[in-house]
Length: 620
Image (cartoon, rainbow, N blue to C red; front, side):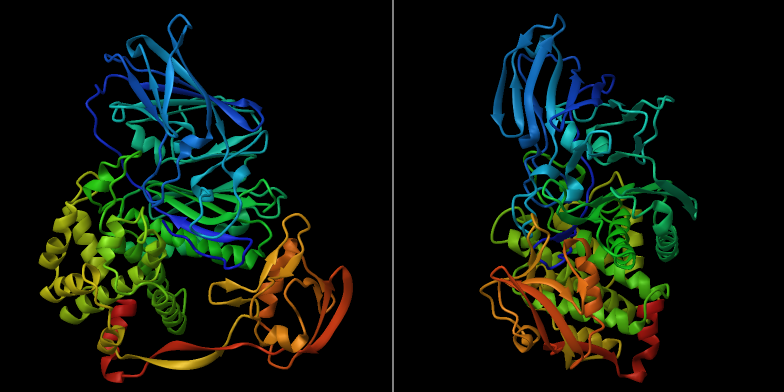
């Protein structure tokens, strides 16, 4: 999973990953039939009916997932289930006992005909606090807004009976004719008021989200892959057609970069835009699936920022078709949704994926060399703030509990840099002929979608496919506790580090914001009781001040992204006027812009003798 922090107190951005489920002993001749009724929504609750398979035990347990692959958190989706009832064929109620928040035991199970329950949506209860709280990550959650939008992440609505996870699921969803379901699954019902989907097992169902809304979608084909872009924009401000050109450019470049490593025939991008109001989504980013990505972003973002965020998150999620889809361990292949065992290899699932999401852009000419180096510098800076002596494999295997849970975000920083170092080692040893993409292609051929590896055997396999130096790196810096000497690996490609002073963001220090938003009034507020930078002190701004306008342009939650993006163009000593409200009284503050300056690490190509290897690394 990937979580990007838009580092303001009112919003956080996240990404994610997913894969498979467990093999069971039930006969595959049976079928779980599920009915989901979107026509009669009351109190933002949806009725789900599950017809039971033939059960031969006296008791059976029905589970809603605690965790789904790729989210790396215990989210307890069962907390959104109400009034679960079980019936025999005559309609007689059977005794149901709630075992825990996600599990229900049903007695006289041999006579069980069906169960029914109500599903609440998670968007309604999000508090919008920062990464690490108990909110469901929005792209992994659910929205139920009758007649407008249903974000139907299937694990939120449908569970599984113990030992019946490997039999087919048939899901029928009845809905208003005005709503259209966007998904990578094939609808087997020709009508416009019902959709029917069949999956081979529960894990396949979980990997196929559906978004119901007024139809706003576009499709295009990239190298034999059909791409669906579907958008829900409450105000109609954003359309699928308006963002499709950038998405097509990006995904075409990704497919070119990957070559023949993937054969997915259809891929869906489901974009939900949040109003950011009290009962709407507040965790922004994306959650990947083998054939789809769910994305949640704020509708108030300017189009340029929205497209940039889409490119960042979707490019990461799309590369998950390499790993963990094609390359993954048994912990993922046979995932236990309610007692999960985590793999040691988040450095690969998330780190290499994030590295590819940046490398392909320089490789395909979408960004400059300077941009690429700046991204690496930013990752180094953020990784430096984490525990650099914690074993990455130990952290990964224990990511659901402390102190490892708090280090998870480092998979997108140090994990990506691990991928970079491996890439450089392989390039150097092969005289530029091969890199980490070649390694991932070989691992994909060795394993693939249905053949998992043993966690403790992966490093030996990678070493056998590459060089002893790669194995030594993995043992020392990934499994071990030694910090990575990045300068050693940059030197191999003629890149050096230096420290420079650069102007910082006036509204942000690192990941710490200076401003927040009052969700009731939409007012922008300077956060009280914190040390403010030169921009605030020079103007006389104080904690608790409400920023009403800057240079006579009014600002609020509705256009806060305009304010932030426009501040990037401010120059030192520019004249500025800020209208504020302090202790209920309005006043005007006039002065000059004083930018906060920060010392940052910078990377530059300085050794011309290493140019050939550097070019192979960046563009080979």
